[in-house]
Image 1 (tube, rainbow, N blue to C red):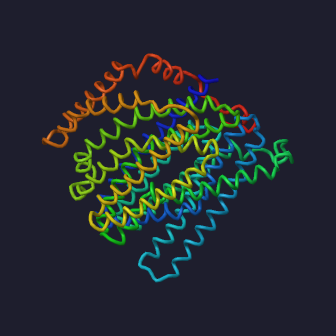
Image 2: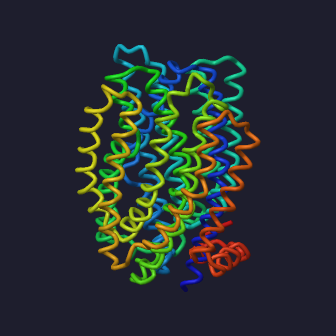
Length: 508
């Protein structure tokens, strides 16, 4: 069972990695087009509009996507496919109703006298599309069809590039770029719906899975409590993790500073989706193990995830920080160079804070989300206080420092709570080895990228040399062993199958 779970986790990560690679490429490409087309000031308006969509979208979320993933995967893990299917369907319908209501309320703001009426209407439609895409993706995560998610991610990325490219060719302004973004969102909704329909929605209404026994008040109370707690956690998340600094930059700084911060945050968060991938694949695994009351397995997954996540995230974040200057100049142009320091601060912070996603996933999977809500409140207050102190004086750089300080504090507290809760030890030796190897391997590259006018070819060569040196050092200190490579090879060679409990649902 242990090897099966490990192989499943690795396969899920690999499929999600494909989606991430495509999504990251599409994001960088489209953001470069938008930034160069709009310029810093108009890019600030675009970034503010997208922040508004993300923030108001939390009201349309109310914890339902997380609940879909958790309870679908938990009931599958316990062998109750009937309950998994019905709960998934009903939560998705609830998400549709809530998202529609929030979208309608947002549209009502056009009645106010504002120069951004058209943007508000588009934001309302984007909120609906974003919420639907999140719940549909959560359903696929719940049945662990990460292969389907990866394939859809490729098509969505291509749709985003095509729509933004057409808008640029037509010399569109802020509204045109928002329309192009909206097209990409609705393409994603349509593709994810088709996949979810094959997994859950085609189950016949008179099937035996609709047994009256699954209508249990205790289950309804569990789901309701979980969803509302997660909704509050997401509200806190919008303050600490989701660019609440944009609001304070709007009040105390300029549109250009918003552009510098949102651009840097977008790049850093896209790289951070590597950690999010681990989170999305671990939540259903933790939920399955929790459904079987197997806390030993939960602890082992947690320790391994911390080790391997750091092994990937630390060098990538430090590499990106070292290359930030040349890359921003190449991709976005010299007018966006003030965003380089902001990006470097966020990336160095993310090398550490990415491990928080593992602990959060475990707490959600074992229904300990109340801890996140309680401590998250204090961290959010800290974040707001730092915003008020630093942003008026330092602009985008102050916003990055405030955000990172709050995140690091929250991850420290959360990680030590999880370790105490499941009674395991942090892999300190592996952590020290990863950081040491990454710093040693990337030091020459950092010098070349920031001290001399080095060509792209030399930088690429330095990256390749650094990668070889990094993995070589891990092998020398014994943190990357033959067993690790064999585990990866076995997971790659194992045939991917749909979850057996849902085979009757015509899972593809």
